[in-house]
Length: 146
Image (cartoon, rainbow, N blue to C red; front, side):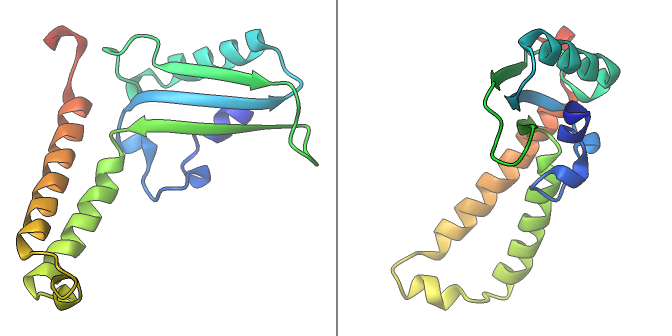
């Protein structure tokens, strides 16, 4: 159950749905009384059940760790750190909001007054767009292309 909850969108700290992208890599840290074998089986089950949400061209892309000391007041807990192409949704939203504000030069004077140049904002926008494109390429990539 803990492994299922880790991959649930409502338990993520970022407002993007992981089912709209593909996991590149995952680190899962468990705390409490459980065996490493049990954890590995559960993670393998989740990965096999949801294989379309994991890229196949990165072998062994899930790493797990177990600490047998549970957090205070709980029997067990887990932490999920994942690199998913779904994050591009968030980057796109930020980019759209930035573009709208930058077009109006909103708040720009605060930054130029502190020594920044307008060109730095244009470069940052370009970097963000490149990052979104890169994540899209990773999402679309298959093992045969390598």
